[in-house]
Length: 200
Image 1 (tube, rainbow, N blue to C red):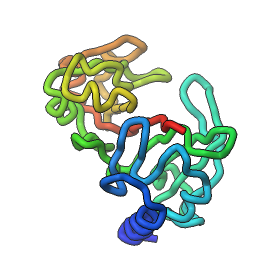
Image 2: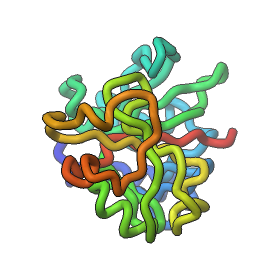
Image 3: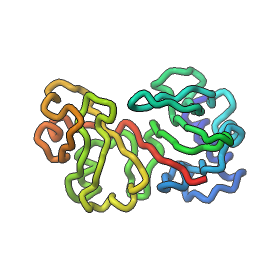
Image 4: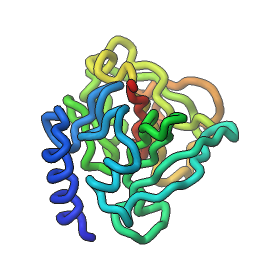
């Protein structure tokens, strides 16, 4: 199924299920990932995205943690580059945490996968704090320094990674770095993942 067909299927599922999102791809912190809420299960996901696009998988996270979950693929070719969403589920099989890898999903201010560090800074109105690279929590934003994104992304995790790690040694490790650090500015990493817990 192509991206255009997926859009149609998702939109149809959104309308049929009566979700309250303004857009089928809008992220609302703690509440919705497009039409997906904390009440959604495998049934609703397959109805919206297509049965062949949703698979049960073991999800592995930082520091060796793992959880049972579901993965939504752009097409039924089950490779990492085709993942749209990774969804950890609770004991009742409902969506609990959603990891977003698709640049069509966005917040009200326009934060999305693929955005560069400099673009994120502009939206925030000031530099932000992030972890260094080359460890379990690499590239995770840890503070918005009172910027415009602080409230909107209070319950949304954003991770940035550089396309090329050459010259990144100075900003590696578990320390915190300001986004206006000269090395980070030169690397200009991109948002590769957005993580959001959902209220049940």
